[in-house]
Length: 298
Image 1 (cartoon, helix red, strand yellow):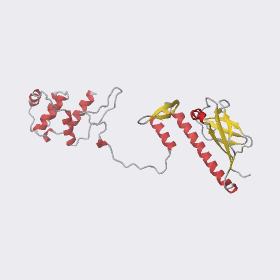
Image 2 (tube, one colour):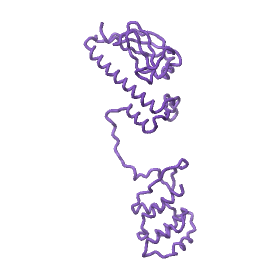
Image 3 (cartoon, helix red, strand yellow):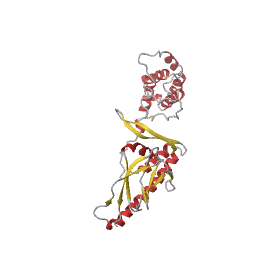
Image 4 (cartoon, one colour):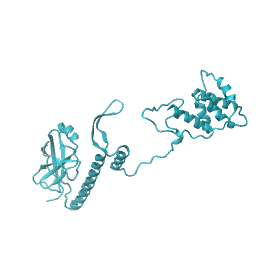
């Protein structure tokens, strides 16, 4: 880091012509170089660019008279002179693992405000959270890198803090699962729209909703879903259920935690059975209720 810092000072000095400075400013440059630990040769070579006032050996004599003070002139004065003469700042360098980012007299800010362009932030008219999440994962992770993310949190005194998370899937698997889920949701939404349009004329003013029926979601009988390969499914037999029916499933309060961990998504009605889908099979049996909404008038 010292070599990089010395290069920054030399770069700043190169942007300033000694002939454009006053005698006091010329002395200030020498003091700043000595305080920064650079050799007198740097001052000598730079001063020689002022052919009208340069005298060989004068830099060494002045250098030896610089003994410091309680408020020494530092390299910051050199940087200030350089900025005043049009210098745009150091070119920068790649950081090593052991490098430190510090803020102080030599580095007044981690980001030079002159490098930041002010732009007005416009909120999008349409949010696309799935695409935003995909771009986020692609920008930060390689496809085979595992991603850790928070699934539960709690409110502390000042902010929300993580309570539970997952780290069992790669960025590629998450993106693939997201694409599958979005595709399924689009098809499901389109099917609901078609169903609503097709049955609107046959509906009464209110839909026929059955009474709540208690049932148990088992831990066994789950299989990998061929439609949504990142999910598992389990079929529950319901006599008389039709593919056109909508089934509302509500877990009992004592089963909320298990159901949330399993990661249930929307259900699918089939002839005589209800298909449940989840990220994984529940770790314990889930007590729940279902209500059937008959969307087609008999």
